[in-house]
Length: 238
Image (cartoon, rainbow, N blue to C red; front, side, top):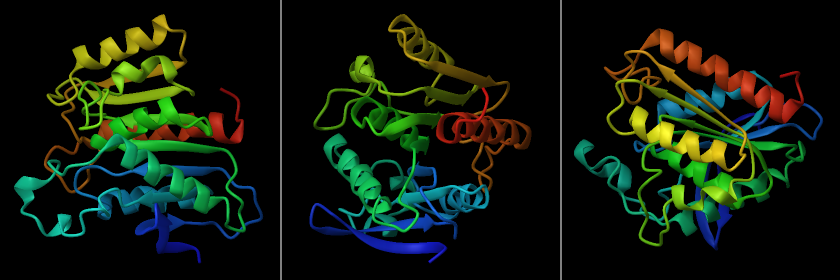
């Protein structure tokens, strides 16, 4: 298998994961891709494809597998699906465990998340010690609690790894003020962090089939993601 869908087990249930696994001897660096509110759609699959081309093992678990009819809902329901932080962490841990069973053996691991996936990426960084880095692209909802709370922001002292944040100055879901508050607290706590704000870019500016797409900001942000994970997963010079 090189790239495509696999079905793995998570807490006894089936969970689909879109994966790219280079045909090379391991252990290879791996990246968990945390989906946005539209699921593991073409945009998220493209992220996996691009990381695969860069030589990473990449895996995007379907976090909404507990709600199988989610993708049949109306577009207005996107982003309103119910989830728990415990469930999200279980999904990420199940994906990590699966990667370790592959011939590539799953080397150093990081997580990259988009929109609500940015929240999940931040959450994972507070709870999963195996992660060597975490990226939140326009991470939405860091200040909001899931039904099982607390908020990811309230867990910030437990951050385990370097954080990269990428957001736009026109984002109304994860505003500059909110992101600067997160940055200030990470810095106060001595947590490695790097925040980028792209001028005139709205929320979801990297989503190529959305009117909010901004090509220049998207290219710059993708370059930052690759440089960041290269340092923390491959040991490239900073």
